[in-house]
Structure formats: C-alpha cells, structure tokens
Amino acid sequence: MRCVDYDLDYQERMLREYAASAETICQRRWLFVAGVIGRFERPTVLDYGCGCGWFRAWRPERVGQMDTYDIAPVAQTGIRLARYDLVTFWDVLEHLATLGEVADVLAMTPYVAATIPIKPPATPWGDWKHFKPGEHLRYYTFEDLEAAFAEHGFALLERATIECPPRVDIVSFLFERRQRPCADSYCETARVRATS
Picture 1: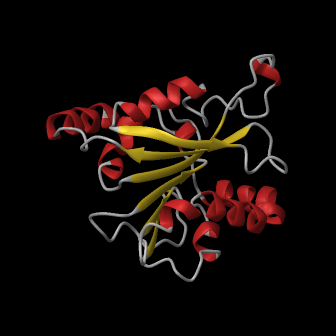
Picture 2: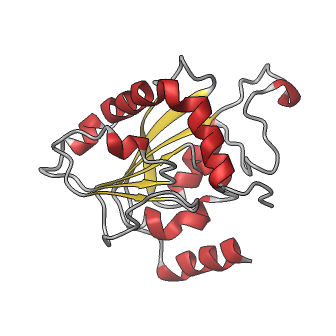
C-alpha cells in the first residue's frame, strides 16, 4: 500500500537531492537508449514518471515529440499519442506494486527503458539505501524484472549500471517487444487489480 504522497514537498526533496547530478544522469540515459531511438527518423518518446522533467530538458534535437507524465503536481505534457517509439520509466517501477498498473502504457510501445534499484545479495535489507517501505512498493531481482516484462511481451535487450557512480545499486534496462501487446481481457484484469 502506498504511504508516500508524491506532492510538491516530495518533488522539492528530489530536486535538492539530485540536482547536482541530473544533467550527467540524463545524458547517460540518452546514450543508453541511442541505439533504439536511432532506429526511427524522428522518434516519439514518453517519459512516464517524469518528475520535474529533466530527461525531456536534455533530449537530443533529433527526438520528435517528447511527452511527459507524472502523478505528481509537476509541469508535464500528458500522454498525447496512442503510440510511442520508446517509453521510459526512470526510477518509477519500484513505486508500483506490479507492471499491470502500467499495462496500457506498455501496450503503446515497442521499446521500454527503465532504471530500478537492485539490492546486492550480501547487503542486509535494513542497511540498504533503497529500502523504503511505503515508498518503494516492489523490489525486483534481475530475473523478476525480466519475467515481469516477458508477461507483457518484452525481452531484455540490455542492462547496465550507467548511473553508478554517482548513484548506487541502480540498474538500467532496455526491453524490446517480442510479442503482440497483451490481450484486452488480460489488460482489463490488470487495470481492475491495480485500482482495487
């Protein structure tokens, strides 16, 4: 159950904590997805869970339409297209109980990029920086995340620790759709579960 409000105070805390490294991290993220966006003449991108919009702010000129969405009260474009060439979930998936909560968004794209914290096996939960009950609702292993995306028709293309340093235990993933999006009945079931 979500206990954190993603309100203005939360956003300001994130700005203070990450402002110094934001440009570097965003540039590394754009390099990580360069091979995917290079497959499209003017790629369309949705940054889902955009926060204050840093990823959009440092987008390459060749990117076509770039939309942003967040549940927090931040400036955003909203989801304006029915399909995107790439959807990003930077620091988002750990805040969701399941990928089913974003099944509709996953169905809109052939490519997904994401970052999540992965706990090193030797680190006790209580000592781990990213152990945040009530804020982080789901903790993945490499295998768990790949299996969750496979349920939605995606296969892993690449994983890397492009943000470390300055960040710690953050892993970036790039997925490609290998199967058609989930059946409407499955997506509907996922939506019902996510809102229950």
